[in-house]
Image (cartoon, rainbow, N blue to C red; front, side):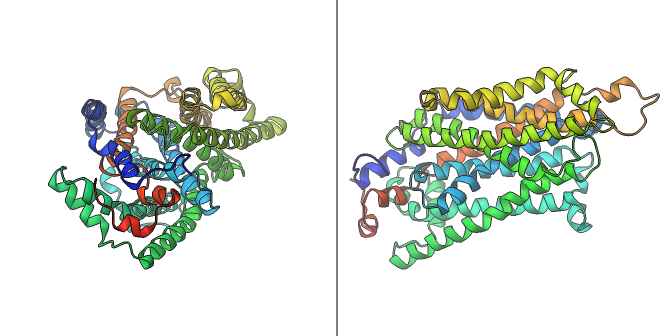
Length: 445
């Protein structure tokens, strides 16, 4: 609930600023397109020369691409956490940030699917995944649930937009014709009748319920791609909930970053308040604590049993060649953020931005730690195997393509924020005590 009473015209005017304001927009989009341009060039090289152009080998065949895929899927789960889990509990303070979470979910989920294509040596055979699918294949399950999540996320993003389209049709008459046509099309003939409000609220609730098992299935199935193998480092029964917990932490961190820049860029301090940052900061602490619990389980159990091969894997993480990266992720991406966020002053916008960046970077590198070190310790005999086959670090092609995916996801969020209100006008107006009749009779002053 907003702290001060605002008129409907004030709310509409404030929340349409991102659509009308062009300050820095062209420069930002040009930067993202430049990053994507380099990535497309790198992918053209990979497509021409094959995966041999990357640093991947026969032994380490899952590298930065698969690590990025897990990270993108994880970040996309923030839409479900905010809109569904928190929304269904009736928490009102999520109203100004729910749409932002859905934007992140749509952008990152869509590019998660594309990253799988980048990892394929023969992307022209992608259709075979559907034509010749094997039900017992976790890869088929993964493709299915990711596609389903994308579809539901897009619908869950568009549904609450329908009442807002009427406001945009009345206030965006100075915008290009193609924009006005989009607003008219997406309004679906909205009249604002009580029956329509009842239908849309019921539909949003139904989708919010439906998306929960789908979202949980995404990261559970992704974890099964690893856990259903007997490899050291992946042979674990906790990977399902472990991945879900990590996804919530990564998503909460990403949400805080986007919240900060949207609030700062468009002067929306009256809507995204310090109260909201404090609440999401507390949510981040909770998810990090759960994630820390699973991290301890991940290593203490094999460390206690110390089956054959576990010693090499754990030594490489704790004191070997992966130690610096491993401890950096644990300390700066998890332990320090938890300790800092327990202090109320650290749950302010600027400290939270810095902490969230550390959490998101740690989440990204954590996926790398899960994927690569295990492949560096295969269970097959390694006699007469070139040393290069057992060492992996992504080359410029992989970094460029991964950067393209990140820029592409951010570009989707940027475009959605430019085309549509970043917050639901009708829901915020309703919480301000503005009646449906007043919204239906809205006219620009």
